[in-house]
Image (cartoon, rainbow, N blue to C red):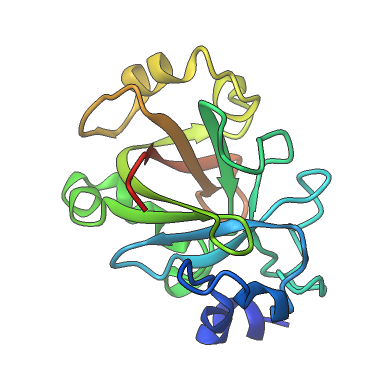
Length: 199
């Protein structure tokens, strides 16, 4: 039930930009939108995208039932992450698995020390972006600006409400959201800039 998502075997299917055809043999379903890595954390997972935001809550990247579900991109977001604002969701698991390490990012020092990440887009890593984690907050799951994709309002909302805010840029924003705990409507959200690079 937990094996595929929580152990390191999933890393065997991580795309390699230098081997374009590698994903052809991957058992991860065609719903894979990319791969998310945050340096110095356990976050190193495929990003799935379903037809709605319930599909991958209890489905692993291989299409099997799993209580841990998958890391998944909001169904309303562009699968190539070209939107000015995109949201990725993941369960809050023990031992920092999935998005369990999100709480730590509410500490400014931790965020600064774990600000670098990578977003590979597509099953074959057709595009690779650097990520820069720059802000974090606790927020209600009912907050429309954050979770209804209010792209034109999100920068001001982050500026006004972030627990940690290290800098502000015009780059596209990727939000990483998880439950604060199992019985709470509070979410911990970490915001990253999607940075253009020469990959």
